[in-house]
Image (cartoon, rainbow, N blue to C red; front, side):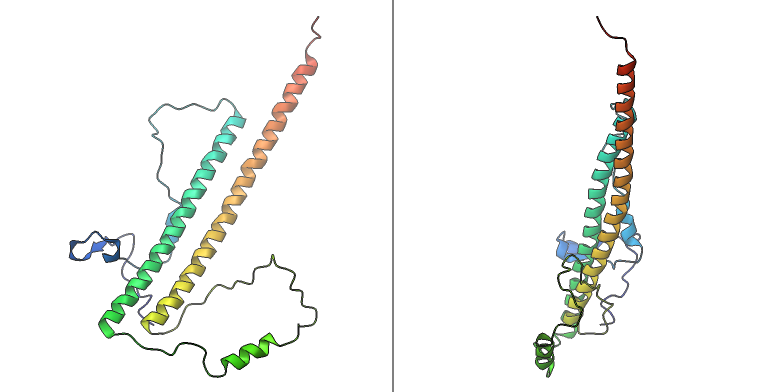
Length: 213
């Protein structure tokens, strides 16, 4: 369906319009998810007042621990933002399909398997295992991100666009998780080095102290 993913305006510029003055989320005119919009998920509002006094870290180890805490909080908030962006796009896809059906009527399609598909499925089910194939690699994902759907009736297009949207969400969440983990690993290693240095310094001072009588 060519209009299922048509642009409705820039999400950063277009105000959210409400029909008939209703505050119901179902009545919200949701703009399309534009390219680059998921990158805005990284911006998270500050929870602390920067003008209020706070406990200053006393040493580098404390600063690194505080950084780790802030990174964990920020990562969780960004992941929540990413999920919200794609959940909102899913609602827009369904909303657009409902509008098209309300205008043009429901396009009836044949459900179930197409002629010949059952025989094809059973042919693959009964086929021998390929030589050298190892199906014990359960840790390897066989998931493939859906491709951009073609022209379909509203209801079928909504299904395919929803699957495509879910694939994009998984890709963004996975990519961000990898990026965030690299940062977490950096601070974890830095804290471990700092704690090791602190312990070595403490042992050195203890060894250098004169014996107490």
